[in-house]
Image (tube, rainbow, N blue to C red):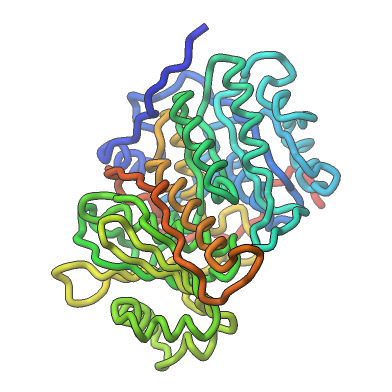
Length: 431
């Protein structure tokens, strides 16, 4: 039996990424003779709005990519559902699609045997009935589920690609352990937010190596889950700057009226936020007047670059960057969600790159980005609390442990072209 290698999994080259993006298929050099078999490990699979339903249904029935439907190229063969009794929809889908539901993570990965028997793992630890801590973090059991996956890998002396929806965990130590295991056991790790992959207006990407000075993201980010979406949007752009990602020096969070006081004292942030306001043709003072619970996450990078993530209304998720040599800010918006819920809504590109990872065993982007986004959010949530006491103006959290640098080589990964038709899920049952 092959022993695990200790090197990091390779990344898709820019040429391979562009080729895959253009064709919607894996590069020919990585073609596989059989369809990969996937195990899905989820917390909750109920209402059509649950992430498990959004993601897994696309893997079963295909997805909309670059203006056309792409048939499924993988097979979902097993599932473990942590809150099974509450997941009636998941039970019905699995029955209709002939997907076996197992009582443990191990059995889902081994198909009831003793050795790893699948070619990839899809972990969707999002939604369900779980409690929040004092800081507002929801204890989704992502780390708990992930470590059971790792145990199977180690016992089988073999690993396969892993997808993890949203952030890795609520705290840095668990998230770093999850990332480190992907390197130790040599498997690709991909996940995070779907928003950076969504349709953009305009349909463009920040140039790789751009002399970026500062960034602002405005969007729905007042709670932990929403904040992660916005932070991952930030990191998807910030990592492309000249010199690549340098790591995070410190994080701070401010709530309430002091958000606008801080903005007035920091012209770089005020300028970029106002550029977003102008792009949407809002009246002066729009954000100050419409955001009920103002919040801003401040990020200082080790190379001196700065960023601010604002809770804001009416702009979807919008990124604005101050790029050296350009008079006007670089602004891109990720807008809207087709309704009613459709198999082809929102982030089909998210699932596209998931499938590409399974087929090629290469990460669509550096998994370090997912780790840093997780760390920024965890530090932000901690900033306003100390010794059990809350402060609207949070303390600065120095983050020497986020001294993580890398140079991305990826090309654009967001969806483009005509929007998909809004059609029902292919359920296999009527109700």
